[in-house]
Image (tube, rainbow, N blue to C red):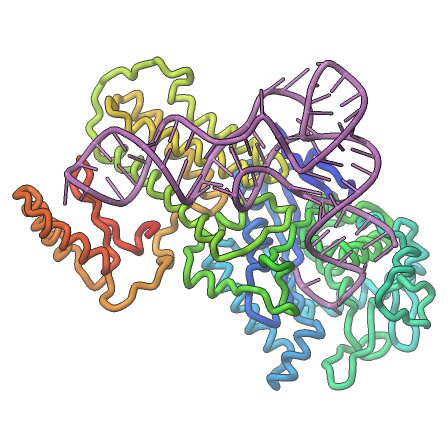
Length: 494
RNA sequence: GGCGGCGUAGCCAAGUGGUAAGGCAGGGGUUUGCAAAACCCUUAUGCGGCGGUUCGAAUCCGCCCGCCGCCUCCA
């Protein structure tokens, strides 16, 4: 099986091959840190984190770069409002982003280049474009000349002339062509600016990604990610600049765009005020649940957020975790008898681990179909449950081996998706009043023992009172044939 | 106006020519002192509508209806 990905540039799924054997170089459009991290930031981060894990699982080395757009008018506006420098403000919000990503289990990428640290690279690239005749200066500002780049529009399917016709923006009459875009512009009054061969000013939006991706990756690198909202003009312009500058193509082999997160009433965005921060979600749900939710639909499609939907996902995830834990308990505690498994099954359970592996990979190979991958995981879990819950279940050495292999494969797949329960993760609910953790294991054992005795004496009211009382403290008791299972709120799904 | 996407069960969602994954909710059962957890069975002769191509269509083509995104330095 080979990996196939949907490439926005061609508009279809293509077989994925790398620029350099065994290594994937990727550039992911990152954040503009000027406000709290919201769900719209979490989707791409979790998606790309999953892609990276999967590629590594498949044996690739991955080099990933994600820019930090700290030179930005919104950053500047907010900084001015608060009376701090742009850098200071950006650092504060980027710290928030880092913290959130850590809690979501998103591994850091290799490089996080900041625009303000790369002005030399940006200026050098603009100078190169001027020298090659692809850019021109007007009054201290520099514009890219789209007419020198015939392929302009190939990513978004826009034609530069039709763009003008339907444009909602006022066209700057000084430009040679209305679609020409700024590479360097003068800073508005009072805004920080950088020295340049033209006038003191600030880089255009798109040039940073061209300059920084080439700084850290090789021209013609493998994947470039970002939201569908960036296809035009951001990525279209990035291609134009980069390929014109290099005099070669392609700048990027595969363009991969994720769909927007929407609220139930349309796109989630700061300007509409209908966004939800990741912080508030993490206060209510575990990170694994959020990841599961974000991966429940195909990345390329829009995803509608609502509290109810995440709550549904939480129920699904809890079932997954409970099942996996049940399997673990069977593998850990039951005696192993040398009894042969009845072989009436059409497919022996010894094949289940391999089936999960192959279904999971087939799904992920098919343009990172995490929805299908999740389906494969749930099928595996149900299979395991039906075996260990069968009335005549006997854990023979043979069955033990099969289930053990299956457990390991479930863990591997769940870790790729980042939904494997993490130790020490935040509980998904904040306990109130007396904390469950205030009750020591010794005390808890005593209570459970007393309850056992009560049950043996058929004093069920007393037993239920103990169980109900502990439940209120966040500790659940479950009676199983092997004895009473203790579930503290913070060490499982809740 | 231009470009692109979407419409599959009560809800979410996979499925790009071969006879509808998975999850949530609901119903019935097994197990349990009762719960919990788990398992089993159950819910789409049909995939927005109407035509067409084909031995065969949710999948391809045409038209229509509905929703959404981008064309604004928004992930």
